[in-house]
Image (cartoon, rainbow over all chains, first blue to last red; front, side):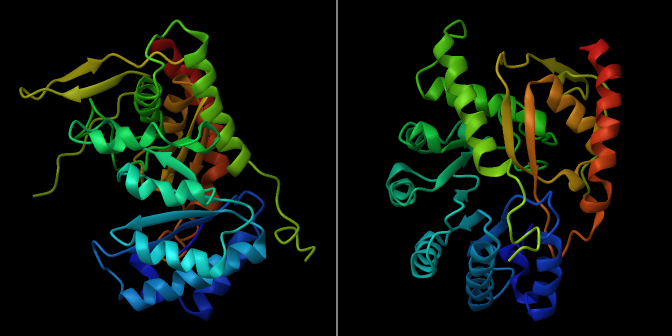
Length: 211
Length: 98
């Protein structure tokens, strides 16, 4: 639950009040997706940066992790997070589709990295190279459904079930190609446990109204 | 031009459209352990309970759905539990047609 950078121009005190109310729902486990999108620039960049800053502060106040949407804005996004401080509950960089060089500072900062459909795209060797470098305890899988359908189904509507293709590709990329080996299953189970550890959480004290 | 709506197949199979317009079945990845979709927009899917049921058939045992405070309204909050309930029923139907 959060205000996407596309909608940042609408982020004001009134919208934040709605967000605060929603975040108190015990089913909410993270604040997101939030961040910066300089590709589409559907909100002015200054508005994006301000909404992002305010939501980082809110995540920290609520004790929740943040889920990041960053597109062509990683320098500014990382700078803002560094200034504000990464939330103790965790930071998840969603839909990673860049190379190993960009990946490094995020993993060094302890972020979780989620790979989706782009990991399977034919012309995305740099994403697969980056996926080899993420610490196993920081790796997650995702779809971004209904978008980002993985190969070989690109062009159709994506659903959460399609994450099976991305997970299988991720296991291959990490060197667990043999379906029969326990190591492949253990690796995939690790990505599952990473997701549970970060996102399948009990309501925070703030969400319960105890703070 | 608006893209033609895809048919909803009430089974657990994956399909892609051939040039002649027919939908052919694509082999499912072999996954033996639970996996997670850490980022989906359930309320944007044509049939969220069906999607959740299909996900369960493919070992996707955790789905995190994303809601935008400005544009998504309260639909997910109001309907999520109902979607999960209907998905549990749907599994019993589509599980027979994999």
